[in-house]
Length: 374
Ligand SMILES: Cc1ncc(COP(=O)(O)O)c(C=O)c1O
Image (tube, rainbow, N blue to C red; front, side):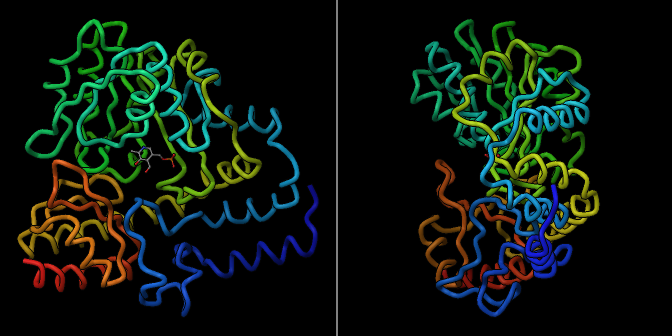
């Protein structure tokens, strides 16, 4: 594909506007990337997006693909992308199912169980895309509370699994609590499952984890385990708007839920994902910065005497000491949009780890708000 002068200028402008690690998602903010938030342009710390993204190499790839917007993603390009992902995961290409975000794959899995009238076991609260879609399409949902450290309680979940259970949904790190489970412990949980049970491990935030043994279960897919591991380019790679994720599954299972997807990837996905995976510096820098800011947040929460769940993702779930609605309203007055309420944690709030200026502003606001609210 040849690039015109205009393409090159566009991509150069995008790159210049976003030097490595700059505050990409805030570029539209009047006054520049690190400008203070206003009522019209608040800091968006509610959806666990990664404002450092997209990686510079992916921006360039997207800009260089603008001319192709009139085309569909070709089967060849999709196959090449699947082969790339399969190679990285050490599995066969038939074990990879791509989705317009991992959310589409969660829904396809929910639908797979729902249309059979099957049963899904999950923690409560949890990220609910699979669970809600399953419920809406006919599944029965069995929920298990988090344990006292706000971790998914695998012992208690194992106890409610019966011959009716078709799928167990785990989220590691967990959303909304942010807590992580040890991969070895999840592996023994999987081994103890009856053969009809598929364990889905949603690893949307796994790249941010640094707790002991909190790592991907994907290697189990090389040994024929009856699990599905989900990954996304929305979080570490900062490309939520691109809508691309993938599942790794046993071949037969991939063939069952793959056709339940609603659509297929857009034309930017293949070049952007390829470029993002190649941008090692971006991934390493982002992980380092998010982990450092996460530590700054938990440090301040400890100073303020506010309890928090041990965070392993790009967000922190903490007890605000007041009803969620009041906290959200006070933070909104500081031009910070926070995560929604997750019952039964009615005083708790989930906050996304944004850029360093965003985190500084949030902590300053938190000090003000807690002094006012208590
Ligand atoms: C745990 C979890 N899984 C999956 C998703 C869906 O992400 P996407 O559809 O952007 O890949 C999210 C989004 O926030 C999430 O928190």
